Amino acid sequence: MGLSTAIKAFWFALTDQEKSERINAALSTGQSTLALEKKEPVKNIKQAVGSNASSVLGRSDAIELLATLQREARFVDFVKEPLDTVADDAIGAAARTLHDRCATIIERCFEIRPLVDAQEGESITLPGETARNSSRVQLLQGSVDSTDDVKGRLLHAGWTARKCALPKWSGNKDDALILAPMEIDN
Image (tube, rainbow, N blue to C red):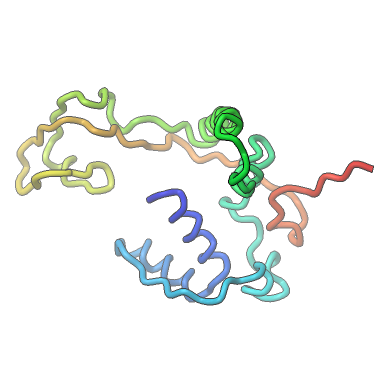
C-alpha cells in the first residue's frame, strides 16, 4: 500500500465512523478494495467524532508514530511545507536530513529487514507453499498451482518488521491528538 493511501485510510478511520467500520471489516475479512465515497472534508477531529473526541479516541499508536516522526525528524513540517517556490537543491538537502532521521526512527521502532536474504536481480527458488502466500510473495508472471518449487528473478526482497516498539505517551487525554506543541519566542 502506498504512503498516501495509508494516510488517507488512517484519516478516514479517525474521522468517519462508517468508513472506519468498513476499513476494519476489509482488514478483518481480507477484502482488497473499498469504495469510500467522497464527503465534505472534516474540519477537525472533534467535528467528526464529537466534542469529547480525544477522550473517546485516546492516543493511538498511529498518532504516536506521527508525533515521534515530527519531534525527531520534523516530518510533518516537511510534508506540510509548500514546495512550489523552493529550489530543487534545497528540497534535496532537506530530504536527505529527513530521510536519515526518519530511517533512524523507523529502525528503532520496527527493526525492518528484508523478507529474503538475497540480492535484487538474483535468481531464487521458493517452496510452492511459500510462493502461494500472497502476504509474502507477489508473483508478477505465472501462477502456483501445485506444491512445486517456484523459480524466478527477485525484483524486490520485501520487508518485515522484527518488532513494533512505539514510544509510550503519558499526556493528558485532551491533548491526545496533538502532534507537536506550538513554539513561541518572546
